[in-house]
Length: 418
Image (cartoon, rainbow, N blue to C red; front, side):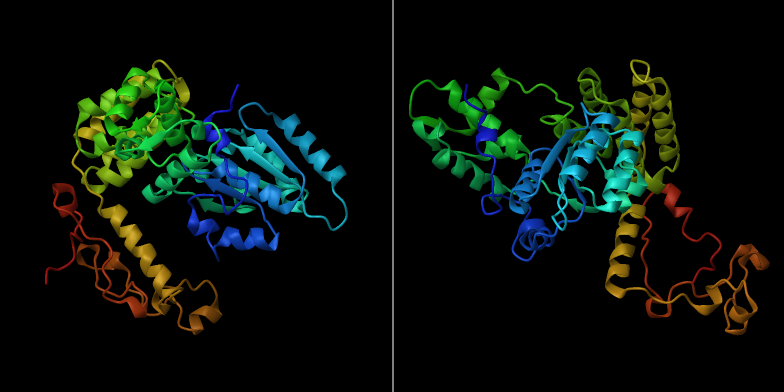
């Protein structure tokens, strides 16, 4: 039986690799590491089908070093220790460290991740982890601090088109057919930046046609997918499409649609903590200061589902979903921190004004630390005007309150009006 098209098209060199030019393009960080054959431990974070596993395999081939693979779904602490022991025994003096690739590393428990720490720190293995989940939530801090983090993006339209044409012209099986790519809009839309999904849909359409030529059109793609609907797959496929629709429905203040997409995830067996985590993010990003109670409720829902799981977990999730969708919306805090981060990146480490510095020792006090600080509680309305920004950034405004009742109350309520 022939391999699936996506597997047949898996690249084996960087020259064949499509996308992620910010990491593997000429002069990019990973490209330099690979060309120099000096790889340090890192974690690849990105949605399904963007080349995480492929990139790890290409690196292993290029480094010509032993390559061990573990799946976080099926491996335990014993499996981790066995691989580390093999790597230690099989390594020769001055030889590059064996590579240990762990797919879906976010599924590893704390004890499994703990078992990796010593080997990574000593250089017994070079760890490459792949995850579709935010590592700051799912990877323990000590392990994360020992690894670089590289973010992979959904493939761009140009990348997907290049992959389509390469498949049609270079794949041994597809070359046996007369395939004409008349339209590609539906293919690109349904793939959602996922190379594997794109190739699966193409293969589905081609296999449905018994006679040549096979004309790939938007209408034919849609019809074929309706006849063979892609099941909700919490490990990939529709996973990111559904959660995207869920969050966008909340952001768009449509509780009915939000509940529908929530039900789709529940019926698909989604991890309730995954849904709850997205609700916490939405409460911060989309509702924000327009209704600060939204974050409290989302956090409470996260706590509740962590304790009770399915099926009762659907109730606090539904409560939080409706509340967030029906709440007033503001992204002022979200925009504010992004603006602040950009200012920090552009201006560097600006010194803290002397009057804002702590003065726990006499020497610091003699140097003027804390001198001139005005304690706001000593003044009417618990407010006094003074400089809080670094000298170079005086007058810089980062937070812009938006037009809602809650934020109007936050506009420095005791500050004298100009």
